Length: 262
Image 1 (tube, rainbow, N blue to C red):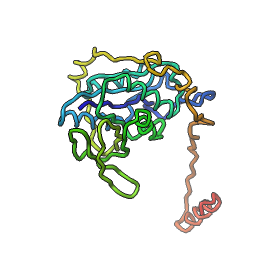
Image 2 (cartoon, rainbow, N blue to C red):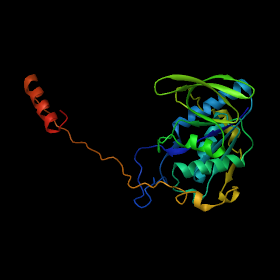
Image 3 (spheres, helix red, strand yellow):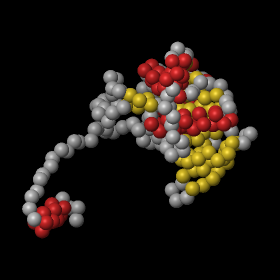
Image 4 (spheres, helix red, strand yellow):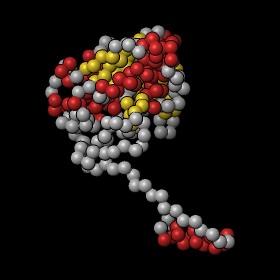
């Protein structure tokens, strides 16, 4: 079974500046990490590999420093990694990101399953996986809670729906987005990290893609634009009230009423 896992490097802190012109996050010079939800996707692939064999490749879109999460994936057990890196990809919304990733996937070998985390902690849209599947013209299932059975040409999964838990069978090749409760991610192996520290990481740019139309990538290929984005205001104002229970309860009531909470 050949599996492809989508991973992303995200800010490791909530204190991130926003470019006032483009409305995108300034990622240079800040601590980064692998998107936590992608760890569950990678663990799902590793568990499937242990039971059914095969190969795991990881793919990400970002600057060259995204190689750090490829190395982390190698230390966990991934076999090959690819970074889609090109200034023309910058500023992409979910649609342009999905299209870019789908073009990168088409450059790689054939796969049985693409596995994505539910969402990312910097965008939180949960749209990239399903949109990738549409561009790849393959079936997909989101919110996968459990892998029930793997057959020769399909996989049976349990998915979390708004009001029910449903079981579905989907044929290969397909795409799954997994929930965080599906498996407990393993820690990277120090021994494997040392053994893979010189393993090649492949880089693809727009020039490597079949579709080289720049209007479909980055800001140019993004039909949605951020009107305004800003960090949340910090409110550290506090008051200490003293008095009897009756006095304090009356004061709390008046404060809630003035704030129109009641």
